[in-house]
Image: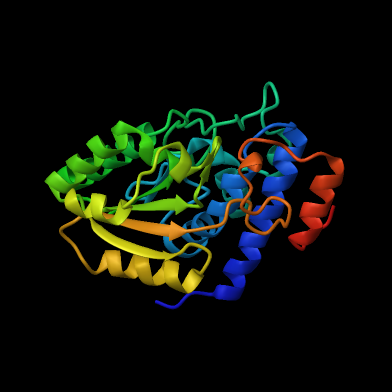
Length: 274
């Protein structure tokens, strides 16, 4: 299966522009980790997952669980671009009465599979979904997107242990490894390395890639697909704030909205119109 890289690059650029516009309109949110995960999320929605915007509850669909729920603007932008809801909703992010909350809400947002935000819980639910797939004999897949700082949660490793024990090969977890969390560098807060060895010790198939390279993302997913019997984790090296010069690799942009001038500059750097 070949991918349309030009299409994916264009979609990812649109997703990033919409992330900035949404967070700016809300005057609140998490741009840094949303931008770092944008390529992974774009690939999944526009090149990989079996979903139907006209029928979000379609039987046999693939599921995405954003375990790092604060990066919701990235998923919202992709869902809107895919047609799950009007793009106008993005500019109502975090507004009272609007559907798009600061973290994913499965009750009110079409396409959201799990309400997340409490770190570690989304991954645990994704493992539960994969267990249900195995019990039901379903060929649908579960994709989970985790933050690297999130790996400091004990709940992550309980879920990883369970997935390995039951051989849940329908789950593919992406670790958005941008190296930063709200308080600074992961290694300075609480180091979680070596991640690859930890997951392998729990019985996972492990790959490490450049999380901004669509060819590498595609190859990693194809590898997971062709190697049954184990759960799969893809450690994706990314850049926090990817695509915006003054946000890149800056922990301060974990949970801060750009002002008018900054938002305009960011959108223009991303190739969008302000």
